Length: 305
Image 1 (spheres, rainbow, N blue to C red):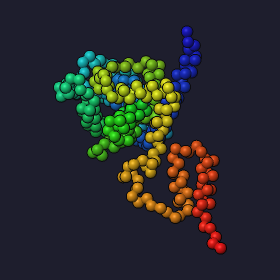
Image 2: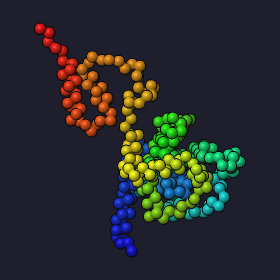
Image 3: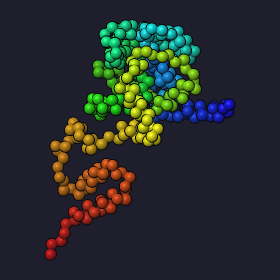
Image 4: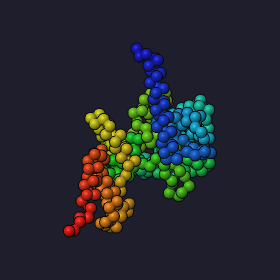
């Protein structure tokens, strides 16, 4: 039998790590400001439960004041246990709103059997949640996407859309009226799963988008999991790459002026450009120093006798 003191220690360590990662994401991207009213989109899955729980803890510790209101969109899917979320939210003593919209029937009617429902389902949800945010006076809309969701989206866009694009941690809606945030942006899914198991959240299964078989997103998830097993650290490095973009070493002509790039006789700028030319050799500082000296020596004008 596992020592309860050890389990308590591990749970406390996990709690602190999640608070640190969420707090860091909020700080890095300016997700929540003083006086904000944040609408927490609660689906009944492990991600949104974890997001709500951690934000409640951070609200108590934060140097700023902000409100939280939980919102669930009841899409009228069959066998949905309507009483679970209201009972849970009442136990937390926080404001909440249950929005009832039969999007399930619309999706099933419009999308042929066997086709993926994600596109239409997400658009319907987004429009409804924007309207609810207006009605509640919410200044921010918080979604429960985590680090692995962001990486899966990156790979999907690379492999199937030919774009270097992921999920933004913070975005403004097309109409400019809403700010959407993803406080779990730095959190790996495995930590969320551990936390949900420890907290024993009343998970509500979903038989809409994410539950469909043979989704390409599921294939991306499996690939990331296999990478993590065979090459530990690869997934984290992939995520870190999203923080360190070098436009001059890609091919997007709208981000870097390749047309305007010409030879420059300025010695200082030449050395700077050399530093940029070793994008994959950043650990080789000693070699870079020697090479930098070599470049300077090569461009010292020779005396003519």
